[in-house]
Length: 224
Image (cartoon, rainbow, N blue to C red; front, side, top):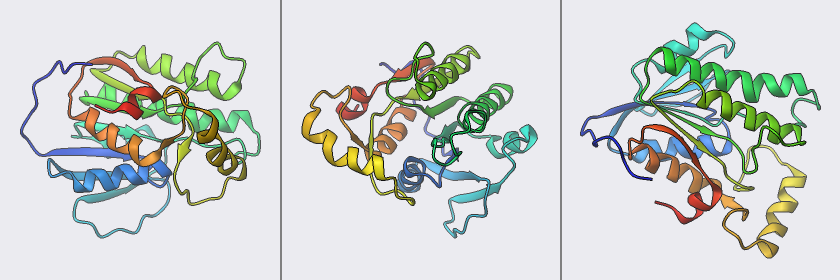
């Protein structure tokens, strides 16, 4: 990928949805270290305790578009790593869709309305609207419909199995984290450190790309 916009030597304000999760939390740490960023809007459903001077917390109702718009206003880049698991929603596909699809599409529509420069979204390796797997099909549908909005710039990241310490224990994921690195060597499918994904998200934001882009797991592994 090549940059299609000139770098701007200005202090940037960014917004992060999903900062309480694995990738989102690490992304906030990357953004705090980035001297080109002056303000980080941390958007959450729940109260957040932080005293960092760069961070402004927005506790919102994700079903309220006005609150979403207020939280992203004047941002150059909006990041979203919002997602759930089948276990968290008790296998309820409607609840799953409400979080993984509806919220992210609402954020994307708000970015379009406010003419945000770039929207970045964490999806999943294997995302495909035609997949027989509900999870992968939903991710693919989400990607397609966000691309169809024709935002100024959209980057969708498709990491494979994430390596890193989560706040909650996931038995199946932990077993996969231990076994997959022993048998999978292709960069397209090998597990990837969540920290690497967060670093690359911030790195890609600096390219100021325009249009729609998919960033594969292999591209994340190999890096810019």
